[in-house]
Length: 572
Image (cartoon, rainbow, N blue to C red; front, side, top):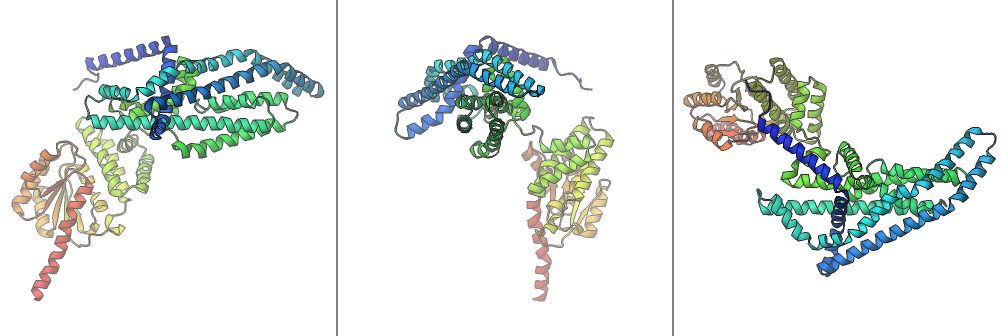
């Protein structure tokens, strides 16, 4: 009996991986400032790369294009930093006036003690926020200054872009074709650059439109609130709504009526809904393809590691890792961890649902795929692989008999609900007999029930032999019914020896009878298996139901026309 514990080498690899990850996290925390600068530089380089390429297409040299794009970025960030700083200073200077307005509101609302208390609390909150503005904004200003310091690194990264790609190719492409790896890296780079550029444009547009709307509503410091909203939109899910809190409180404290805060809230909500449901799908799809849980965990992790800067960088970093995981084989695990697609394949989901005795969910899964896929495709990609997994688990002693019988019953009911191929208007046109034989077990017998749903022959003309039938009984049935061909189902693993034995018996007795073997689901050693079955007397071997269908059609059509030709010969 195999040991339930993994070998020591597996534990060593796991411990090595955990230790490496721990050291990497510790290094990211210890050298936080350095890695933040490098990360910001790389992300900005990805954002500017399409711009640099565009300038190159218009005739600028690479160096001049990089300098132009970098200077433009410095101008934008510098202007933003100046604007935010000026707004903060003006707010700090003017807050006593707003505090006096709050006190007048409190005095005018007698005897409503609840509202007096509320506005008093708003005044206290406002004073506290103003007192904390330098500490709250300090990380933002520090980030802007860090970006300014990192400009030189961005410029060198853009200038050396092709050289860096070549080095990454040498690092990741040792086991694959350089052409394939190059295309993968180019595609990943383009997708990352496009996504980040679109996100920057979208968030900046959100902040500009919001700032203009707040200016129309006469809310003081509208540019500051717009800039904060644009920056906070980089934080997934909650960033937009966090950026709403401060201007709402400010409006409640300073507005003469309820119109301004309500209009502010309505504008914010409408703008966010339009951005999330209209602008984002147009610019870069419904989503970045990131699992919501992965996005939240990423935000928590990078925020814990690098503070506010990590929160802002979490989504771009996660997108970069996900795209690299999709296109670089060595990083494929990142797609499984971060992607929004279920890492479990459909056939395994079906198999797991059946083992969990969740028949409704298993049936729903198959029916949902039938809505968008051809039935033969669903059987080849879901049902057949699930049956193969069941045979494998049974051989290893992992599938109890009652679970196997439940799987067979559920699958039988699902197949019974799939319309026969001949009834879907794709009849191959012949009232010819076909004999279908299972090679070894009930799963092979169950697999044969898929034939009427894939091979376009009337079920009335398809005789399914029982798994309990002896080879002599199969020979007698052939002599009695004279079928046009025999199909043997032998799903792996196992079943090859019985299939070869049956082929030899049939070929010895019926030299001209077409014998097709369905080794459906087999993906390895196909040529070797084919040669062994052909040597045993099989006419042909198929490894998918679709391939079996292609083999059956010409045989059926030939058998259908044979009686007509005989009648013509007799008449002549």
